Amino acid sequence: MRLILFTVISLLLLSCKQKTAGAKQQKKPKSDTASNTRKDTTKGQTATPKEIDYYTTPGEAAVNKSLQGYFKTEWHVLNDKEGSWMKDAFEYFIVPKRKELPNYPYITMGDFNGDSKPDTAAVVTDSLRTKYRIAVLPSAGKPSLWDEDIMADAAISLQPKGTTLDVMMGENAKKVKLKNDGINVEYFERASFVLHLDKGKFKRLQTSD
Image 1 (tube, rainbow, N blue to C red):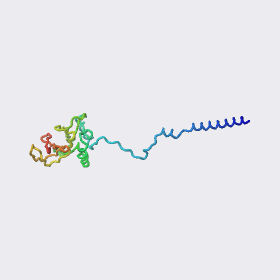
Image 2: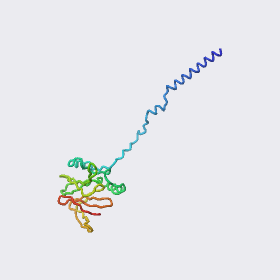
Image 3: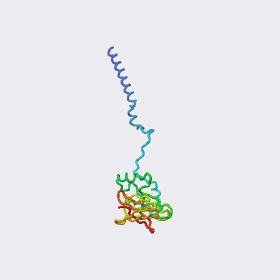
Image 4: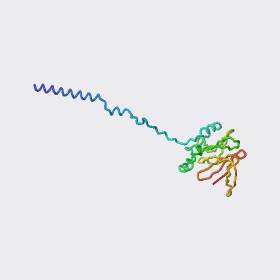
């Protein structure tokens, strides 16, 4: 009798253990669900914009379009990424001036040919970035390219007409008054000169060594 009772109790205990084990297997752990679903931590937050590789001057697109009309894709406006600026010189020389001249140092405007209409000058480079020029785009007519100096780290700006310049003539200086607007070309802590139109051709007036 005791043997029969012991057998019955053992069978009941074994049956309870199997039911409990089956219930545990059917229930999915919380960790499984979490591992398959990425938690969204960006909701309600503003995404950080991707860093811009180089500065795009406001007038760049329009000038490039004008250049393409004459030179196809041979020339385009230089930008910070393509220039040969040293970091310290760039931050000291270029960045402050952009507050008042957003197109600096690659584009400037003025009446360079004396027809009372705005013309554009730009530092440009070729598709391989091996050549650098100053392109002058008149309000009407074909652009011209000036290539008598290295422009990779040159900055251009307007030199207003009527300005009297001290032009270097060897060891002496000569005063020259501009009849039309000129293009001031300068290098950080180096030479500077002004390009002005003389008898249909842009000529250089050296203002510092």
